Image 1 (tube, rainbow, N blue to C red):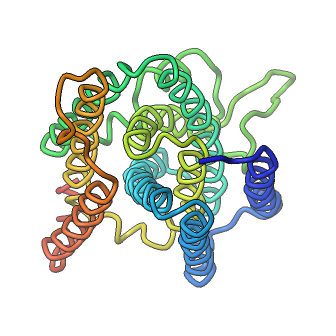
Image 2: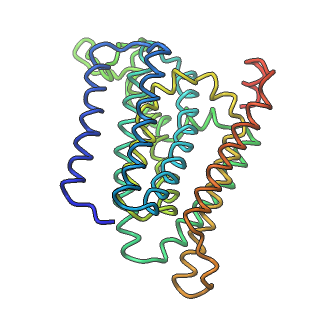
Length: 325
């Protein structure tokens, strides 16, 4: 896939402009968006992603188009799991509803930064040696098993809000008891104090690092084109904060999402290991899994996971849903 420099610059420029506009609007007036506002934004970003995938197919061929859609769907499903952890963090830290949109936006910006770093590192590692696919594959298999383990142990809450970074920050820095709007720090009697918003940002940022470690090897298992890896990640994150308010309650009903993600990550992990084994002539051509099969597994897994979750929870109360998580 031959991407000219100006294409990269235009893509980054447009996406940065959208993000900066979002920051400018949110920075001036943090608020809880209406369902109509959320629906318009989510629909627009999903529509743009689909149009972009069609454009990739038209200009670069169906192979790259399928790689984009497979990568976007995988990253979007991982972002939904990321969003669920965001919901836990907001609830446990008692973030005021009108400030949650700002906190989410900061979390998404941090996710873009961390994923950009890992995309660059991942590409460099792949170009340096093909054996890195063994490491990526093994890590995804470990993550898949860990997701299943966490699902049955139900220990997301403590991990989301009390990791080592957060505990260290709480012990080391002075904090105010009250929220100070969107400010991360204030001066009181000449001394600097950090606000609860700063702690929320630390929690979201540390969570973003963990999800970036999962998502980048996953998408490199579907495409090794940095342009597609980057755009799939950006489209998966854009509109995520509106989605938080739009389907915050519905997301709790996707009780089998961790199982679906474990299947997807496990499948991609196996694919990466087989790809590396084929590269070193350890297995035959049969070991190379095509993008068509990958896309099929991802779509079928997400559909079955969603339908099974909604059937399981259709008659459950909020209390029963909380117990399942």
